[in-house]
Figure 1 (cartoon, rainbow over the protein chains, first blue to last red):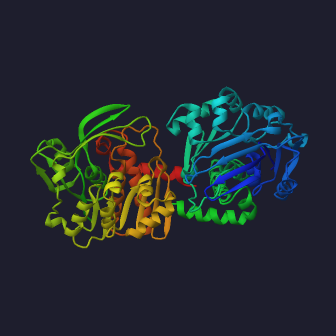
Figure 2: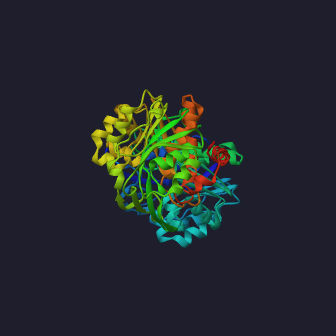
Length: 299
Length: 299
């Protein structure tokens, strides 16, 4: 089953205590597409500027990401620059230049409109809504967001959520969106906005998975060395959705397994800058780590 | 197998957004003994003042806690007063009055000296060391501590740890003690101090269990309503040690199960002030919640 992913494509400049990289491939659509690609075929809709390096395009093609919906506009690609301290928990944004992304209006190519799995990766909730107007009865609609949209486009986000089946957000965003500190209560409020399934990402502390009235918790795969946490959430979502789409069927069990696969895919993503680590591994490496994870988290 | 617990016995005054209680039964030895008592017989060594309410003594006796080592000194009982905001993660200490506790020198009754399981609950590391001088070859020595001792008696704590088999501490304490932010690295440093087994408590985020070179992670049993988190860590340790002592044998599997039982015992402790909730439940309630927990954390 093919997945349609609409989101950002960026050139990131990242500083961590371990090094600095300029204009490396990033963005919510890129990380999630590369991650979903381990499990399913993926089509991407997004925009880049005329300065976007050709090598990055061939790199995405090599990962079997369909690029029919990749718009190349005159101008500069969206750029984000951020810094992490030794506490890798949160990035400090140094600068954001929307560039061509500021005029982005997602146009879904006709052949993608029948996608069964649609992922609204982290972009403006108004654009996410525009995507939903163009697709035809997807089996499952997934959505991600960030603190910026909760603070500045709360109403629009809640409108978009009405049609969403599975909503990904992190713990602080869940609290910000609902005003509830307790995550069970926060998830119940979010379910009231529309999504029957809410996935609360807690970084190094794992994931809470709310499926209707039931919920499940999963610890994270603990790493001794994190290199660059950029894209961890997007990789989690990509692995999660990819795994489900690869199964082609939906069940509570598959959702739980999807959270494991999302978690493990993200654990690789943070081991190097950009997609470097994800591009160096195969599905087999993921399966090996899933087995290791099951061992160390089964009681 | 009997467990010897040496620690504090306190009269706590607690303020939470849900209410305030004055001079209620608390202290590291009290919470851990009441929790261990679900699984094994327990003997307590500690000190109270002449003002210590008789009802609390009969209450501990009812929980089958041996009180031959309870010293009653002329003067006032140790008092602690703390406040929690809606973020229940950390208490703000309003006041600490050591009172009779300031002159406490643990004297282990002869009949307790052969205890196979010894728990040095959170007290001054110098006193913990004095306990170890008095006991004869325990099978397992468990130890807990707090940020205050790490900051003010680091050297003494590390000396005590030399003889400890299982060390309980929370994530921020592990970082404070070692200077390592990564918890795997922090645990490795702590193991270098002596304890082969290190249990890092992460509150609502669960537990990391380091057994020699292997480690395991366990999410917490998520509660919709936390009433008073005082004693959560002590109850965790008590349930953990009690479960192991009840088994009478030591294995990696039993250690993992002990973490589950500790976690579930603590989840009850925080549902009311003082020991109120722990005194209202039976072993069966614990088993029921363990089953529920296994369901929601098995993938």
